[in-house]
Amino acid sequence: MATIKGVSSFSAEQEAQALRKAMKGFGTDEDAIIEILTKLNVSQRQQVLITYKSSIGRDLIDDLKSELSGNFERVIIGMMTPTTMYDVHELRRAVKGAGTDEGCLIEILASRTNEEIRRINENYKLQYGRTLEEDIVSDTSSMFRRVLVSLSTGNRDEGMYVDDALAQQDAQCLYEAGEKKWGTDEVQFMAILCTRNRCHLLRVFDAYRGIANKDITDSIKSEMSGDLEDALLAVVKCVRNKPAYFAERLYKSMKGFGTDDNTLIRVMVSRSEIDMLDIRREFLTMYGKSLYSFIKGDCSGDYRKVLLRLCGGED
Image 1 (cartoon, rainbow, N blue to C red):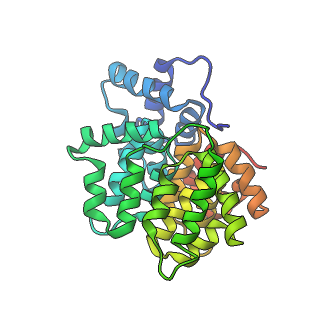
Image 2: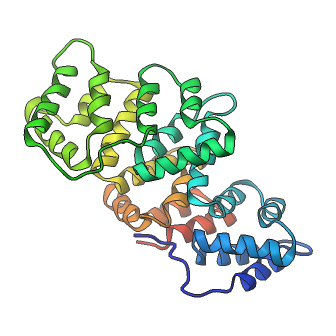
């Protein structure tokens, strides 16, 4: 369930003029900007974007960028970006320049549906003149690279069919590829975890516990390390409970010293129209505190205000 639902009827013209008014002259009315943009959903914001240009003759994104700054600006620009393009920009940011944001690559590729990944690939190529796969390959290495490439094909079986015998066989296969042997046959883990459908994998995980006497996540943790471990754990978590996966991403972005703003912004912006209410519920269950209170304690100013609006309320 979403926290940002949009309004049933609105005038793009009125909202465009109100945004112009909030930015025109001396000073900026940030509260008005937050108010307008959080009541609209992403497709309604696109209509305002077009109307702003046709009625006012200025580019709304440029105006927002020149009036706002820092993390607050990043949230607002993120909200103004169509869903697929937002993922495309984030993936590009993750691979370009020095260093790689592996966490971002893993999060997006492990959690998006086949259809979403197909659209990401299409738009990535149009936007940057090269494929996402090429960028992944040039920026990552070894088995971690292969897992990301596999996920980036968006080719997971999305059916509901569970073949019990095959599930049992897959579980045995995973056991023999990891716990049972010296060293780990990582390809087996990838082949099963990245291609089988969700219902099938849930059955595999149950069977695995029976064979190995431990949870598949514990085996991944003891058998793998680094980015590969993170990637396969993300896949398992997304298969089991996607909102819980995002709740954990949010928790880790804020707990302890400092804030991982990239992750916090991306999850809040990208899930607000999909499953933010479910994420909030999981967050409360997992950490005994509301997501709202966590954001409130971790952020400040307009950045905090807009994130709290995306969060939608206190639990």
